[in-house]
Every structure is written in C-alpha cells, then in structure tokens.
Image (cartoon, rainbow, N blue to C red; front, side, top):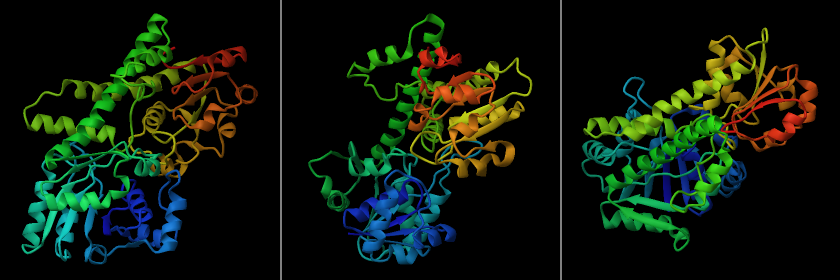
Length: 432
C-alpha cells in the first residue's frame, strides 16, 4: 500500500517506520526543511528505543522516504495519515487545530483516485467532519473518505507498541474506508483487538483513555500522601489494589505527577470540550489541579531537605518526562526544576537522553553533568525525578563519598531505603 504521513514527530516517524517494516511504501512529509534534510541524510531526529535500527533498515530497502513536498507525498497514495501536533491553546487550553486544518487544506488538491485520509493526531470530537469539509471545499471532485485512527503508542515504547498493539481503534463511517484500513492492518489480524466504531466515537476514545489514566495517576499520588501520614507503604497498597482485575496494576506507581505530550494536553482539552457541551467533568478537573500542585509539592520537599544548608547544591537525576524518551514536553522533572530555579537553587542535572532537549528549555540556568556521579559530586541533596533503569543501579557507597551532605529525595522510589539509611543517608521516598 502507498502511504503518505504528514508530520515526523513522536507519532509520525515511528508510525512511518513501522508501516514501512510491514512492507508498505511510505513517504513522510514535514514542513521543516531541517528535519527532512536530517532524515534524508540518515540522521534520526528523535530518540525511541529500537527506532534507529528499523529506520536505517527501511531507508536502505527503499520502503520509506522523506520530503517537504505535499504533492510528492500525497499524489497516488492509498492512505494519507495526518500526524501533526495539536498543542494546547495558551489561554483556553483547547487543542489548537491550525496544523490539522492547514494539512487538510494543503493535501486536498493533490488527492488522485480514491484515498483514505486518516487523522492520527489526537483531535477534538468532530474534527473528522471539519477535515472532510475542508478537503471538499478545496477539491470538490476528490474521491476520499476521512477516518479517525487514534494512536496508542507509549513514548519510549512506541516501536514495541506499534508491533504489539493491545487494540486498534478505527473510526470509519463507510465500508469502503473500513476495507482499506483492514488491508493496512492485515498483519495484525487475529493477533489483537480491532474495533470499528463511528468516527466521533474513535475521537472520544483517545481522550477518554488518556484522561482515565491521568486520573489513576492522580489517585495513587493522593494515596501515597495518605500512606505517608498513616504509616502504610504505598508499594504494598498499590500491589494489593492491582491484584483486583477490575483495577489492574498499571499506572499505580506514585511519583511527581503525570507529564509528556499527551496526558496534560488531553485532560485540558477534554475539560474544555466538556465545558463547551455543558457537561461537568469533576474528576478530570480535580486531576488537572492536583497534578499542578503535585509538582510544586515535590519541589518543596527537595528545598525542605536543604533548608538549613547555606547555598545548597541540588543534584537532579532525570529531565525527560519518563524513561525511554528524550521528550521534555510537560515533564514533571522540568516543572520541578523550573520551580527550584525560581527559588534560586543551584542545580546540576543529568539525564541519559534528554540533556539536549532540556537545554533548549532552560539553557544555562542549570549545569549539566556527563553522568550521574558527576552530577552528585559535592551535592547537598540528590533528587531522582525520572525512572531511568540506570538510576536504580546507583552505587550508594560511591554516592556517599561524593556528596557533601547525604540527603536523597527519591520521587520515583527507585532506591532501597534500608541500604541508604545504613550508609547514613537521610532518605525521603514517596508514600513511605
């Protein structure tokens, strides 16, 4: 199948590489010449575990190419996937649709033959209708259908999730469009749940799923606060809860709050859509406000640990919003660092993958280390903010020799409290 993908970000690029690996002819389109030039030169533009190897394999095989030309990517395509950003509006927090609308308008004139146009970006309910109307207005003679094809790729695990989806949701209003998508996902037939629904239902499923998971994270963080006051252990509480199949054990890890490119944006967009339709979303609104407060609370915990130390040095491990990615968008770590900066903190940070993206956000307001031991040298407190596996293996004996004061605020519960205390650390975890 010939596929055009508009957008080469954290959704578009893994999707394009994945579809190429399945044997399709894929053309990825992006308006940023620098991105396309890099991809054409064989340089991957984002980090995802396992992506680079598949990228080079499929470029070499000639199954995927990159262009800034909408005409080149869309003409003759059986399927065009829109995977551009829908960032929150700075004031209303609704999803900003300008990139979606621009893509739909531009691609319209290059449609040749029957084409399915799929929105893979997370979009408000009714966007499929808008895209359909924009294309028809620009090209009244186009033979096409618009479907909703929400993505469920976890950042850091996007390649794995593409090839091992727990479900594929398709919002299609015609049988002809359904058949095209069935052909696209034929390699997954019998291996996963494929759900065909109406377009507006598919658009809602994505928001409803992300909002639910955000609420679950907010809930376990509140339970962690309760455990700290009562002497219960949040790990034990979460394990007991997770054994209930109605609840499940995922997203029950307490921490500094949710972040990334989806949960903050999608909860705010869902809240906005609800208000526009006169619907109360009390749980989602509570999660949004609670998450904002959570990051401030974590910053205060770090500052509290060094309140009696003059000009304290804070070592931060983790800047990405989660492990496995270099993405710092809405990262709880970055928000906490930002709060610490406003308090005049002296920060040295390390992250295995996100140093470059973090530097673009805060520049020289913090110092950057080459590894975690360099970060903690002469530090007065160590704050662990992202759950990278290598941080679990921190040599606490070495850390004890390197640090000026032995204090740890472990916002991810990665380290063993007993061992830390034996070595003389003042250890603060979450929900313990």
